[in-house]
Image 1 (cartoon, protein in one colour):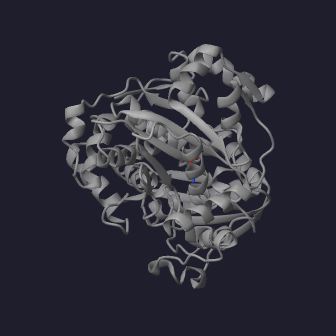
Image 2 (cartoon, rainbow, N blue to C red):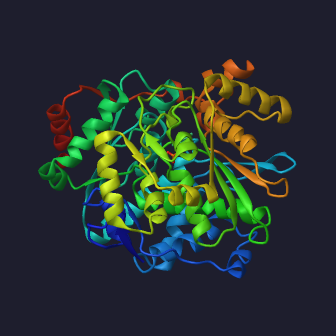
Length: 465
Ligand SMILES: *Cc1c(COP(=O)(O)O)cnc(C)c1O
């Protein structure tokens, strides 16, 4: 499988190079040159298989040739062995035709483990074969950092530096990162905001000399391998509910558009998807886009669902690329104009095409608490604030009652105990294997919001191990 950039001007790459590159050199994102196809018969034959077996079959055509079948199978098996639930992504019924797929049984209790457990092992495999080392630098507002650290801890050829804003992530999120003791993991608390952290990371990537000296790689959702791994739970949950012999709808709490884009990929490769429902919080740029056809970036407002506090959803560019007939030049111009002006309007036919599959709804903090309470009252189930936005969107944008709706439950409620307690008066507890998390010894360094200081810190440690 070959991969092309959404901006049309970067070299066409094979899977291995796409995994290591992250962002394309023309500023675009890599997507497969064409979508592999699964027939209804092929999909039916996967029904009832263990999650890891479905994952292997779905990922194989995307990896095609880069990694031999047996090694890929082992890598996938190991990734999902680290999950605490045998079904990996269990499905729960909430209502006649409303289901939750629980994506929080991985080691860091959010859906990001599904992709990062695979990505960490892919890095390892590719680097061992090439005899190379990489340095990962990433910024996190919470969930990505811990999932990346967990996936890369102790891996020989990878040095990991995760920047988080000092005092601005929750205790649980911080401890999930800072209590990891392996030498290749470095937590940096920056005296600043999440945006400061993200800017520092961007500047490190834009410093060509530093980037090549350190062999920098990215773990955020611009990395294609993350999207690829997330396609699987759309397929597995769809098969459980009767696909491909009936269509399924999915509701997805959305920030960077990575997760829901994986749903779009599932539909492109043959899973019959009736609709994809975008749930946004007060940071509702995607909902406003679906209403008006204009992308209009505003200031990010902190909410009860912090992983969705995003204005510019990077992965939306991957959808636009398809909507514009895969014309890289058009996308390149549109994205450049958007970066300069903070606004972009698509043509009527493009908006119509998007609306054939995508629906969207927004929910503010009061609504999030009300939804958590309503779900608890109706089903006894405690959901996290992100999942609540998806559930709400599922009810507002619900399809014909004959179509089952699967709402993605993206985080364990115990990751956001304050919001949950405020909604229902019950404080959800961590799973037993993490019960002592807040008492474990922490390891982190605090640095000022200063590029040179951070770069020196990284190069000193990356070269010494
Ligand atoms: C990252 C995250 C999201 C948003 O996913 P995107 O792929 O960025 O759209 C939603 N919920 C939780 C709990 C997350 O950690």
